[in-house]
Amino acid sequence: MQTVSIRLDGVTSLAELYALLARELGLPPHFGGNLDALWDALTGDLSGPVRVELIGTHALRRRLGPQGERVIDLFLEAAGARDDLAVAMHD
View (cartoon, rainbow, N blue to C red):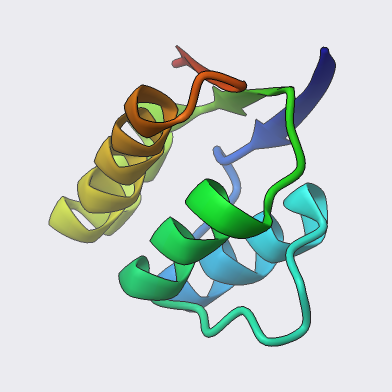
């Protein structure tokens, strides 16, 4: 299983977060940079099996508030929808 570690503690905006996720996860060029597009990418475009480690989730929540929380929740939901996607959170 491939592991992708993504450091979130330096992210200061939602646009920056989506750009970071697209780059680190190798999302396709048509990735739209919003929650719906992230769901589509995590459940359909991302090649598995893969383990995604989100590092700095506490800092992301503090900086982006509910928007950051929704992105984190979406990763967990996507992992529940796929047998070949695992998500780990590290503060």
